[in-house]
Length: 231
Ligand code: IPE
Ligand code: IPE
Ligand code: MG
Image (cartoon, rainbow, N blue to C red; front, side, top):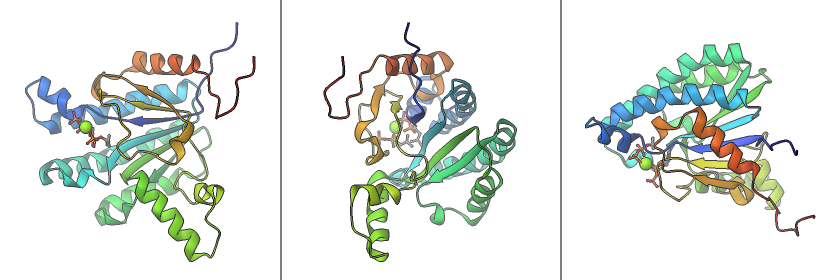
């Protein structure tokens, strides 16, 4: 039997925290705390499954439009999460990277993030890439502007090379939890040929079993990249 294909790079749009909380008669922030806890469980399982890179959509460039109290809570959780995760990622030999414009975050949060990125730089078992104030359109515009500044031709390869993900490339599989069937500005350029997997399961409920289901579904897909399938 053919060995099941494991995606080398998975992207996850972690959606549904608010609805998860609402179903329990709680505030949205309760859902965000549960969602953050779930990141820990899933991250571990992803790397144990043989996946090399995990890109998580934590906060979009559009999420600033939410009520201030919710944004503040999300920022607080990011700080907590980075601090907690640093030790764990060190132990697991996972490198932490980010995508998105973090320069607008509080100085304190930027320090925590930069510290995690710097201290894990040489870890080589996998990459945990976190999208914070991230938008796919903004990323493409940024890449094109960098090329213009450096007087380089605007080509598909040059744009790729100037995305946040330049080093580790494109997700083989993009998972979105929470029932919406859209990308909401996540890895638009890199996702051109990603396999997409949508599930109604809300992010805090997306456990190891659900992840296995997504990886299994990926294993059944036939990727053609525009070519004719070899028989
Ligand atoms: C995803 O959950 C977390 C972030 C976008 C930060 P939501 O907060 O979007 O939850 P729903 O979609 O309202 O249920
Ligand atoms: C996408 O979810 C952003 C993250 C998961 C961080 P949203 O909840 O912001 O997306 P929309 O508003 O439903 O498109
Ligand atoms: Mg949502």
